[in-house]
Image 1: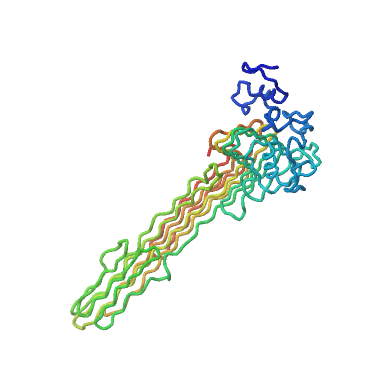
Image 2: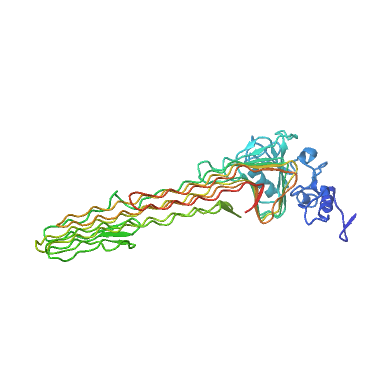
Length: 493
């Protein structure tokens, strides 16, 4: 009999170890000293007192399986082998094939462990019950120093999601890879989300490089290299006003030519407004040509994305794309030409002002690389563990602005119309943020790393801003480059 907190209890060896650990001055078994570190065995604490699980004879659940082979038993766990079959029973002699299936079967049977033998597993796994994962075993279930490798082609390799009980991952290599065909995709080996007691012991967590962000697209705001020609006069009838509409809805109009009777002369216009009155003059003995339209004004450059992403319960989501740059503004149309009233000859119309070039689309963020992410979770890394992250992805370059459209030529008449001004070039899109390279990223409580080796890779470089559109008119503005990513051992996200 042993008294704990004034209550007489009959305890077995494993439960006694739990009570020693959790009655220490530390608030939980995550804040352990040497007396507690041996008892880090997720899910096994209940194995001596639970109604469904009986500790095998000779098994010491406070030890790793290689140090207590009697625990490697069908009554205490589910077995996984690369040569297994997910339709099998999960026994030593009939293992399942994937770690995820092993976790599913163990949870359904109320077993505390999944035993994984050496080899490579290419299907991601998720822990959503207090079940622990143990490697360090051959496929004849004997101890070995070799770690089985969990390495799916892309995506998060191992998740622990909303588990209230203890989970231990031991003697396992976990590799996270980005999708090489997806710009800005991140590489994440392990993700612990909203779980209260997760420990990684003697593990290797490796995340490969994040992929580069995508360059922003370049778009068009008009059709044709030159805006529409001004209307041509016919005898006493002046060239008509010529309206043009750009793809973004902005407009420019060449002014109408004066009639032979001396009426109807117009200035060219643009919306938004640009330029002063530019119509010609009408007279009995002479007239003047319409004048050239004023070139369009440039628009604002695109702004960069500020961070490469955000961590939530759903995982790591890439940051917002950099903003698209503004289009250049259209130019003023040419003024209408004057007429000679003594001859009843009309003036020509002005050409349309050119449309502004389209602004470049913003570049996307580079992918990040995290060996371990923790979101509102309590996690620890102990023993001879190694966490390393690959290079962060380069931020995507902002899209280049389109050159402004050339103005339309004048319409003929006794006095010709003016040519339209040239549209302003579009500005360059903002650059994408570079991705992070961080072994441990977290929101909430920082995972405790004791004795582990943490090695970050190179931070992702900033995405350059897009080039401004030029042409013969006013040039746009270059886009702003995005920020670089970060490379450090641990980062609050």
